Length: 178
Image (cartoon, rainbow, N blue to C red; front, side, top):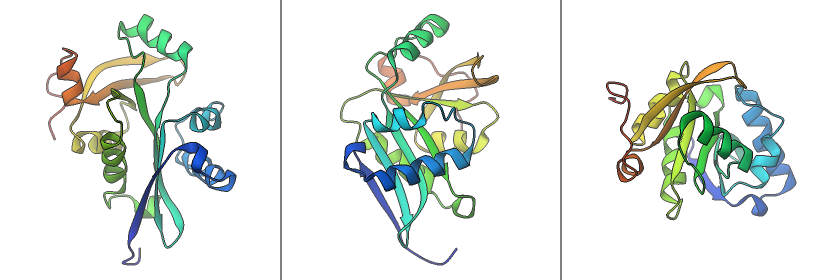
């Protein structure tokens, strides 16, 4: 990578052009691991979309999504957690040649600081150590692990340590040290 400045944008989805939203969707899909059936729907209704650009080229994305009502209900039934009114931090994808430069950490930190009083959670695959490292750098803790029939994988539900403490939720012991 050239020694080029990374520019960060935090934008409501309705302020993006169709082309910009298409580009965000392509980068998220290229990262894999997401159900693309709901990708555009969820991004169009997101609270905020974060983008990182180098020389006008999109190199990283993330978002604060508004979870669908049926998803909130599934989490309530499966985990006994009520995430009604929470925002989900997700769809984080960094182009491979730009990984390890702190872009993901900066995007997630910027989203969290702009959540304006909302509680935030993230679902992170148990085999996704890179995203877990980013979460830890953003003072986020794992609350519970569960098997997702939809993805066929073990997922951890993570949230900022301050939120977990305020809600009386205890992090999984030994899992949240950096």
